[in-house]
Length: 76
Image (tube, rainbow, N blue to C red):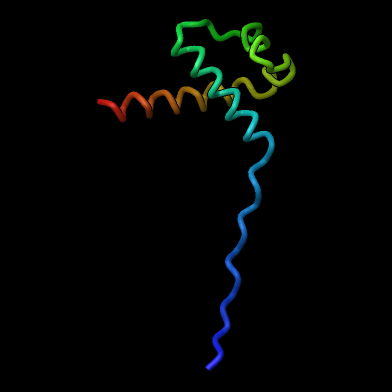
């Protein structure tokens, strides 16, 4: 007997902005855990332009805070 199966619904590729926000948040976490101040000027030294920091900085900050809280709770 022949059985037909429908193809699974493909998930769209992640947006480029999500990748930028994730990288920016990771850099912020790395800087904060190493004791450095996180400012737009210091982020420029890590390769992020001023426009990127202005556009995605708030979202990246929120993501970095969520990630840091989760990491702390995991080790308690």
